[in-house]
Image (tube, rainbow, N blue to C red):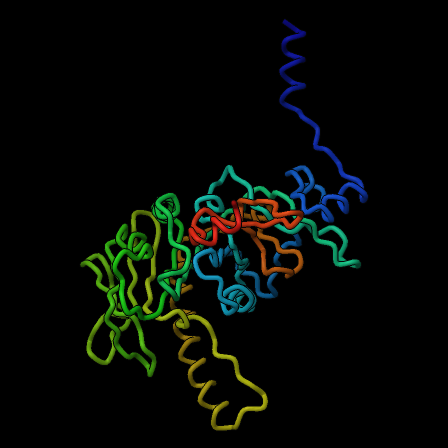
Length: 324
């Protein structure tokens, strides 16, 4: 009996493996993603905004990897105190509380060595997802289900797009339909910009209407969570102001950004109501910006020595080129 108990305790107290400098650099050179034990030893550098508000934000770029959202949106949100990181991985994988994400580990900053490793998933208060081109990688059934469950369990979701000439067969509407909304192929002008017109049921509160009176931004509660849907991807992205621009152009951009500031404050303030700080254990991290990150695609293949990361929703023709 005592032997059985000792064996059980030993099995439940598995020691975490430690890695030598040589082992890590060897994996880095070979393109090997290190196991979870390595992330415990060399975790990604924690995101610590100066005005930390305790809110974890996942900026999804797996359905449209635009530079504005990959490299622009997370730093902008961090300026406002949000612990924001970008992700190129499938949403169902990133939101799986028992899953892991492929990330760069904070290993050797002096020599700019940030090897890939599997890191236990963080918890998120808000997911921001956007798609500008309906022909970009689609939202899979598993991702739509994961987002519905995320919101139902108390998470907040911000969905954004731009006007589309056709919405037939568009996977983003599969996502929106779960919450009683739909993007149309119509557009309306709001504050000087073209927005996609949104159809919503009576559970939604319309926040903005275009010049023709059509809904272009709306919000609703869904079970324990909250959602905002917008017909313009730049709704929450500040316009860059070029130092060499004319004073007139600078003033124009400044006025635009002041309006966006009010949208951002109102939107994220509402999305964060009733949210809690998940604590240091789930504080997101990001080490190095090489290739964008912070979270990379979950699948991989080796093409004659070149390691390629990809997601299941990759364009089928491209996938056949990469995988076969």
